[in-house]
Image (cartoon, rainbow, N blue to C red; front, side, top):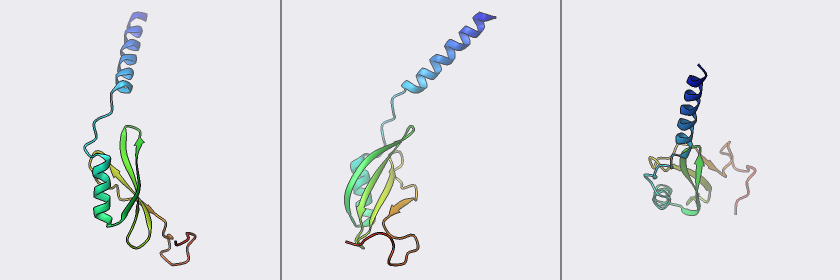
Length: 104
């Protein structure tokens, strides 16, 4: 009975190691491709771009200055090249002028 537990424990440890040691998948979309996509989609000027790991997922966070003068951070999935739909902006949430952010 004790031997059965040992075998099960070893099997579990081997499985756990394989799951952790698995190399990350090669992204379908490169950082350069994501930058070009965001620049094309927004018509703005890219200020910075960085990869950001979310567990096993990789996304690119691209900060862009829009033609309207707003700074946005756009997240692009390295797997699909799509934006998840959420972007951060310096524009006030109410959409009214006079928010807490300064205009430059």
